[in-house]
Length: 234
Image (cartoon, rainbow, N blue to C red; front, side, top):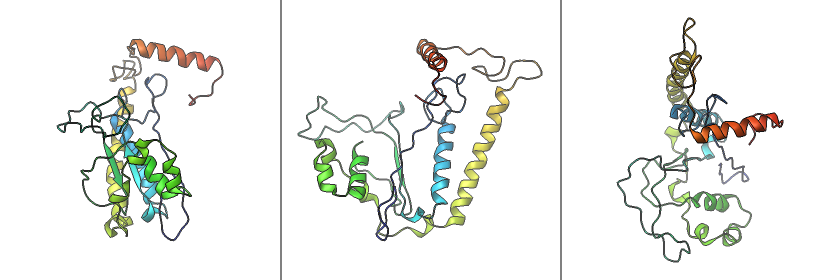
């Protein structure tokens, strides 16, 4: 999202990765979910970040990277109790979900505050709604109670995050690593002088072993294709 005291409110963009559960259907997944390679998901983050850094509104932009799950990693922090008055059936909040908030106005810190998934909704309404109080009041208590991300923002952009040359150098280094990974991944999938590829699961000349749910997913996808559904649509 972008925010500025001298310009009118700008758009909020919500970007979802290309979720593909079968490489045989589409090798171009770019999410962090298995069986995708997490580096494909990080490549999407890098491309988004690079586009924003090169934008004329970068100084007033906030990029929020969130995950819909905790990733299965052990969390040493015990989930806190649900706030009093919550009508739900659960007694504690769930495990912590990774989130990164970045931009020239974002503080350079690790925030220890407990946020909610609805924090994003409340933050966007506070910044972009014509009448924020009215808009928030019309939503459930969970949104009204959620903290917003304003506590992470500085009044002025941090100079080091606005240094275009420094940012481009950092991006170039990361892109070089990802380009080399892509090259190696393509090489593993190619057949070797008439022999199967080095990629055992779905590479050229190799058989891909599907789980039950993948078999069902494949059958559904093929049926939708036969019915004329354009590629890349739900």
